[in-house]
Length: 268
Length: 167
Image (tube, rainbow over all chains, first blue to last red; front, side):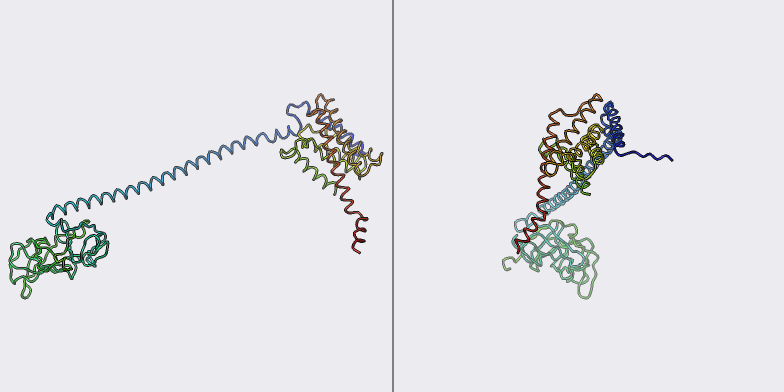
């Protein structure tokens, strides 16, 4: 093995000569210095790769932005559709209520002067047999005021607040109204409950099904002549004839009702 | 070790000087050549020439010029600075200033000659060379002043004087 021993000064001279040759090569190179040439060779793929990556990234960012914008717009449209659907339902409900109120007013033209139109807020026709209206004391509603539906009597006001009231329906177990059967002599008492009946009629009274039951006003609450319901098959229990009644007004269908001033409003 | 530290600092300054935040004429300064001057104080002339060769190559790399002429110029500059400092026994600020001027002048001249012999030319004209000479000399003056201050701060005379003042 040959070992080369060079003096430091000779090595320096050799290095300078080598640098001179390298400089000559660089001066004659179109790419400039050796560093520039090396960097150019090493670096040239990098900008291309970076440009490609940047393009992909830009596309991804723009696509993501577009996707987010589209999703936001979709969500906004869905919210708008939901809002419009709710508004449409509210308008349909209002329209239905207006039609019902109009029919109510047309059905009871003689009572318009002493009545208040009210909307049903809540109702419980199975347990408490009550409904709550959006009119109260400040709207002219009074305690025991009769409440009429489109097809007849619904009940009477039994609780009163400033801006609302509660109605005791005729189906309430403790509800009662003086009643008579059309074309049948005698007056009875319509008792509420799950199966409303007219009691107090003379025994062995011949009552056919489908006879109209109207109020007489004797109890001092309901005006006379208001439709309460229609009769079913009568039967005699003890000293009285008991007539089952199919109530005319159905609380489940009522959206708008007519609240009348009670018969004895002045006394109350 | 000190030389390496100085090399590191000089490299950082060399990189920082062309910044737009620095006064524009200072971009012509070559603080790396002061490392060659510093090496001349402790190393032999040939060793200083080797240091100058490396420094010159580093300057070529950092200034994006053809790599080589600066190395040759740096080697001859190291040799020249070392021989001059020994021949005239330069010390203190004079060592730094004369060393810097000799180093810059030699590097610029040799680089220009090498490139001229190859059919090329320096990237800057004589004004650039003068600017390099002036700014590097100014930095050398600063280094000399700093060295003088440091030596004065660390001098035994000062310590003795302070000790006497406490008594």
